[in-house]
Image (cartoon, rainbow, N blue to C red; front, side):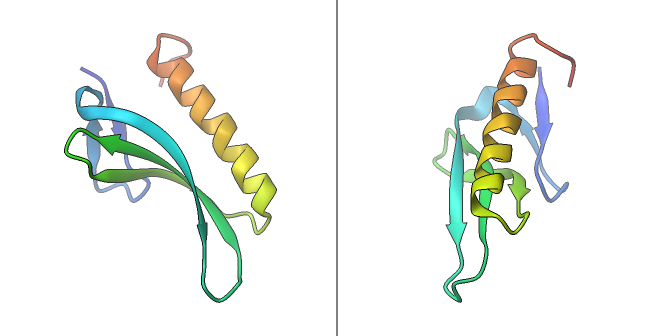
Amino acid sequence: MKFILSESGNKVINLAFIKDFAIERVVYQDGGSTESHVIAELEDDSDVTIKIFDSGNEEENFYAARIYLAELVDKLNGGAKL
């Protein structure tokens, strides 16, 4: 079995229950910063935030999230060790 740790560090997610990964752009109503969240969508249709990117730059956040997700998937598929 393989597990990953949530962003908050208070949840461990069993990969067997993850059905999808996604990147969500979170825009705050005050017009402030836009964050990019890498999330794991679980079989019960809930989701867990794995990592948050909040550099203050919307494009940098999204780019960093894409790289993180690609590296995570590579590691989970037998690439570099977690």
